[in-house]
Picture (tube, helix red, strand yellow):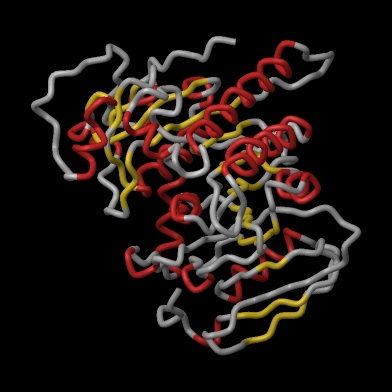
Length: 382
């Protein structure tokens, strides 16, 4: 983020001693930061000093306290393909004002405070974090390295935490999911991150178990269209890469089973938890087209193309309507690119619009708001 919008004398660094071990980056006017830090840890000594606008706050504290609110923004190595997300102090205030008009994402009596994004440095995970921050949500961005790749794009005043989460390591997964009010799983197999079996299947299962153990109210999973149709050309092509479609499907099934078991065996005082599985079509780096361009489908019979930024919006917006999106699985794509699985691969490669193709599954959903878009989704059978 450029600091040109802020007066250097108002940029502050705070040093305080009683926060949990974490890496925090805060950029804020002096008066706002002082107020926030006092509320965050009123009993802790806080030292504020002015620094140049190129410096950002980093704080480290003792390891014997539990972690708190945080957030992060990520960026993939193909940064030249992305629109920058530069927000000054005025942009943060606008985002906060905008968020007041949105449904509240419950914090479960204050125990669950941040949204954890697993796979924050992937291309979709990057967009998820950007969308959360634009809505003024505190975010815990996690990756194998524990580092966010584009700290320069953090909006002023954002709560920002970077945390290690290797989905193949149970302990790091548990720490990442602890005290989150929601978790968005945007990780997938990669050369350095692990195989489809390790990440898209077993890694997803590790995250789902950690969410259930920690009573995280909502888990959102980014999967893929066509994962249940092994005879489709899309499945057959993509599955050549480490059987990724097969492993994604296994991971999906395991999540549904885990949540069904948990919710059917609630003891006294037990909390019902939920999940949402989102199956995008062909992912692009195009600018988002927004809710009115999107079509949802169920049954895995239809797909198309969709900007990663619009997938991110669906992930986050689904958290605001758990009564509509909880325990559901749906496909998503731009409505004017929707086509049956038998032909969608070719139309995606050709970047073809498919308005003229008359294929109706009967489960399509459209809307001018996300609430309308999600209304009518069928719950998964247990």
